[in-house]
Image (cartoon, rainbow, N blue to C red; front, side, top):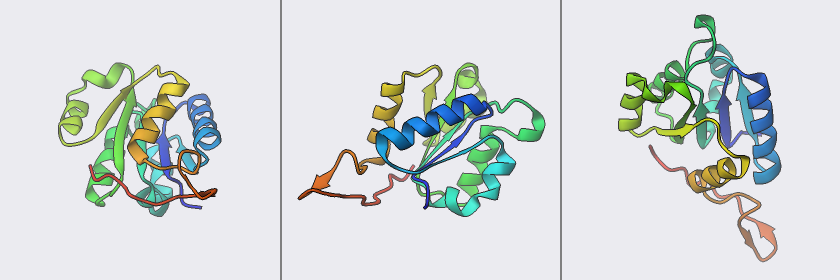
Length: 145
C-alpha cells in the first residue's frame, strides 16, 4: 500500500506515536523513517505520497537532515506537500528559504488533535472524513507546493 504520509524523524518514539496516530485517526498509510538513507530506500513510495513531514535535525551527520530530504524531493519533482516539523530549527536560514519556496512549517510540540486537523487540511479527503452513499471516497488530489 502506498503511504499517503511520509514522516522523517530521528526519534523512534515520536515517529512511532505519530505514525500510529495518523493511521488510526485518518485511516491512511504512513511511512515512518529515521534517516535520509532510510527515506531514500523507499524512494518510489515517498514520491507517490501526498505529504512529507520532515524533522530538520536528525541527530547526527550520518542520518542527514530534513533539508537533505527536502532537496531530494525538489530534485525529483515531488507532487505532494512538504512540511518541516521542528522545534529549535525553525529559525534556520535554509528552513526559512524552503518555506519561502513553498514548504510549510509545523512547530514541535504539537497537540495530537491539531496534527490530525492539519494533515486533513493538507491532504483533503480521507476515508474517515468523506463518504458517498455509505462508501468511502479516497480520491487523490495532491496540492502542488
